[in-house]
Image (cartoon, rainbow, N blue to C red; front, top):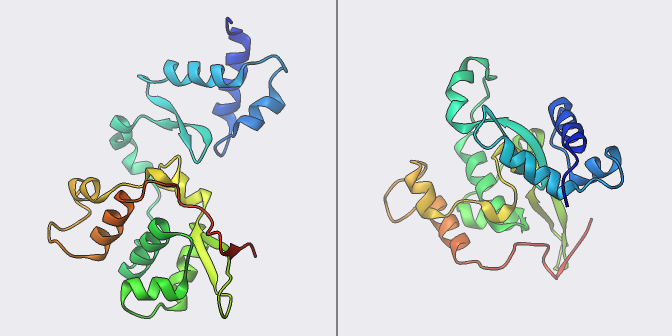
Amino acid sequence: MTLDPEHVRMAEALLFAASEPLDEATFVARLPEEADIPAILAALEEQYRHKGVNLTKLAGKWCLLTAPDLAWMLEEERETSRRLSRAALETLAIIAYHQPCTRAEIEEIRGVGLSRGTMDVLFEAGWIRPRGRRRTPGRPVTYGVTEEFLIHFGLDDIKDLPGFEELKAAGLLDTEPSGIFRDLAGAAEGEDEERSIDPEEEEL
């Protein structure tokens, strides 16, 4: 089936004007009924592959982003962000690699108590959310990462989180055989099935 160039132009216009990534349902609602949305997005992805901006899929949604090799040109335009504390970074990593997990499980992995302020920072950033309650005594709340987390870190799916070797190659890990991130990433590399809501967990 030949793509209608006008449908491709319409999808391109939507992507250009969007202030946030668009899901396929948005294209279905805005484009003519006969438009082949997957084929249109695939065509645009190929069309922009070697241009200054690329069509990228993040968290199951589509957006136009600066080509990675040209990011250096925009450094002066970037907003200055506050760096996460070590406690917040470790907590975020634990939640990302072990979700859904409870506060007690986070503290057990880190080996220290978790301050309320640490979780507040991650909630304010929009990177974590409650996932449900465990059907265990006390019915503790479990936490997981959000769509905003995936988009911010350039991930389409939680399964795209890097493993230990990738983190080390990027200079984000020491080469020492210990450390919380090594343990987390190593554990993730050994998990073949998708992380999802625990069968013994119920929604809030």
